[in-house]
Image (cartoon, rainbow, N blue to C red; front, side):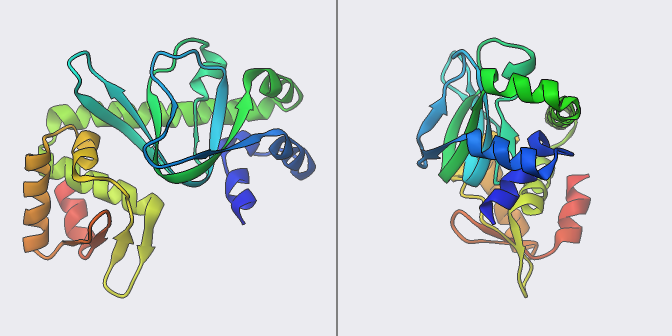
Length: 225
């Protein structure tokens, strides 16, 4: 089952099933505990990763110590592929958000596969394009959206990837601390908590530690616009 999740990553798109299994077998699994750093921003990048289980967060730190959370990634998602097309220092720090297992593939191992399966490069570039689009959207949100709108949008995005439908609504086990959620939306923890408290008072969400239940998705979608 976990291998099926990994094989859904863009790296394996349109690849012959036998070739996919062979490539998967050549990848090295690595366990990443919550809080453990897989690689740091600024380090040389020479491999990509596919998440088999758990969650990984990508973040950056400013010179004055402030942190910005760029993305929360889960099973079947990739990261580190930028180094394959533009070799250079890592642009973010990858840290375990929840105990995870990732499969790594070095640059030297991947290039022959790209030469044999050129359509894979197209799908990898597509994944990069989608990530750039999300980055542009996030920048626009910082300029044009207020904090409650950004919080609503972040909750909806997390629900699409990590949510589970229940009788009450969509339960999202995001594994984020209050500080990490604030970093994800680019605001202070106090402001984000105020927005969440308002959502809860309106009956839109219910907070459950490092999880949240979306009780009224339609209202959240309106607030996120």
